[in-house]
Image (cartoon, rainbow, N blue to C red; front, top):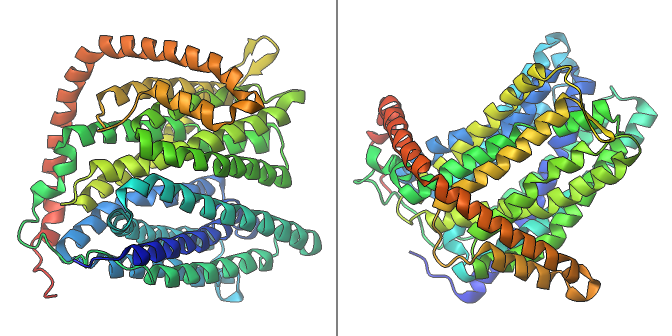
Length: 511
């Protein structure tokens, strides 16, 4: 155990912020719209291949259970994290070679090689995430955890926004001069992103670990410790809520871009601007959400932000004809405001509800279920779009197609999933109404926002009463479902016992 002074802790947290900023720049330049553009324009990828690329970063979270076993068995989470994240970034050296004559004879195989390399990169990055979150949870003082993650996210999001805007402007200029199929513009962005990623690894290596984490479970590591998160009733409630919430949101998530590009025919520069609006809204609100999380807890934030997030699909539905631009701006601003709160609360409550012993397994279970949900949800979304194909519904001046119906279905299911939070217990958390009142105060009453939110607060209080009534009515259903979930979990435990026994039986490290 290494005790850090207040000054050392402050320096370590500041270094972690630099690590996050440089890592986000790499993620912005080597992923998202630029990676999709590279796959489409340079390697002639199909929509299926683009969909696989888009799903890889989160789907790779399913590998975190392997990372947690390695960490708990052999320890040394800090070097494990640094090595994994650096190796993940070095895979981009091979990606930079794909457009060169060396691979010209590969033809269509190049895109699958890109999928393989990106997948391996995401796999290593995902395994590093287990070690990083456990490491940070011991480093960050509990009383400032919400504010620190909010501050770190603000700096990272700002860096990513600047990188995205600069990268988009550069790529637009390059395509105008040399054409969309010229790979040099993309390779330049990827190369710059890789440099920033390696700088991030340097800063990460300068962050100390307050617990020289060795394999403290060398004698006690067993199948029981691995499956402990699934048998922890309160944590299981969190897992069920998070996995279902991510599933119903991502069921429609990838198709918002499809709607903008194919249905509304929004150009690339406008999409970049909309992303900027979302980022700015996120930056503004993170300064508010962080202190609220520290003072009032995370569960009420999930209720308030989750309910607001479920209403965002309505803005996408009215994004038609002459109103489409204003509606898209509203949708992106609301998404930035409330999605930032949800992500922040997810991280905070994960750390809060996971015990110190075996924490990496709790983190892995959380992220594995998110990865599985994000991987499967778009598949169901695509199936539903096929089922709704050709559907037309007129509501007032708006005509709804299959995409609109999918968006509305996603929003409705998000509201139903919020009912599961009634079974989640967080010590010291305030009521949802208290969070609404605090938001009213934080958003500066003198601007006139408070007078408007008085009405919203009253209505939200009434809505909360409705939720309570619904939750009461569903108690019997929940208890019955919980018994079924326990049976399913026991079945899964029996099925997956043998594949991990090899790692459990390995001799512990000698350090």
